Length: 273
Image (cartoon, rainbow, N blue to C red; front, side, top):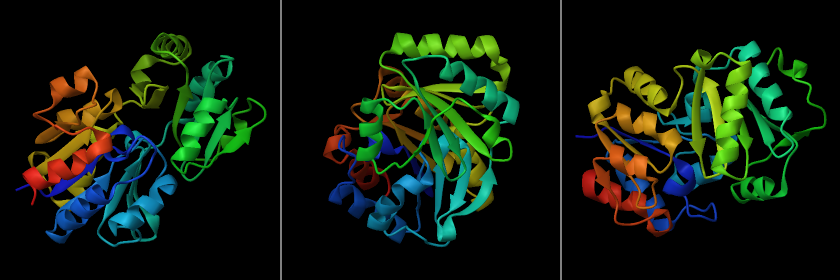
C-alpha cells in the first residue's frame, strides 16, 4: 500500500495556465481521506501554492507536508513550520549568482527561505511567474552581500533556449566547484542550482524517514529533469503524458492524460483509491 504521494506542480499537477483542476483536487482529497499523505514537491516557494493547498484542503493542516526549492525546504503545512532546511553554503550561492548576473539574457532568481528576488527580470519569465501566483522583489544591483545572513535555498536562471541553459551551467561550473552543486533543468526555461546532495528525491526520502514511510511506499509524479531524482528514489515513479523522454524512461507508469487533463487524478484512481 502506498502511504505518500510526492508530486511536482508545474506541468504535472497544474494546468498550463497554472490552475488546479477540480478532478485533481477531488482525487487528492479522496487520497488524504484514506490516510495517504499528498506532498507538493516543487522547485517553487511554498508561499506560491498556498491557495492550491486550500483547494486540496491541506492548507495549514497538521501532519501534512510540502517540499519546496527542489528539496531545499520541508515544511509541515500547519503554520508553515520548517522541519528540514537544506540551504546553500553562502560562498557557493554567491558564485552561482555572480555567474548568472554576468549574462544579459538571464533572469537570475535568488530564493531565500521566504522571499524570491530576481536580478534582471525578463517579461516572459515574469508573466510565467505571475500566472502561478509567484511574487518577487527586484534586485536593482548584482550585490549578493545582502544575503549573507539569510538561508539561500537555491539560485536559478531563466534563459530562452536549452543551449543557453547548458552554457550557463558551464559558466557557473567554471566559477564554482561542480562537486558542490546539484544541477537540474525545469519548465523548458530554467537551469537550477541547489547544494550537492539536495534534490526532490533526497527530500522525499528524508520526509519519509521522519514519517516512518519507506521509499517503496511512495509514489512520485513529475514531468521534467528536476523530477528525475524523486522518480529514482521511490517505489512507484510516474511520468505524466507530457513528460520529457528521460522522465518517461525512468517511470514505471506513464499516464494516458497530460497535465491539462487530470493526469494526477488518473494516478490516484489507479493506485490509491
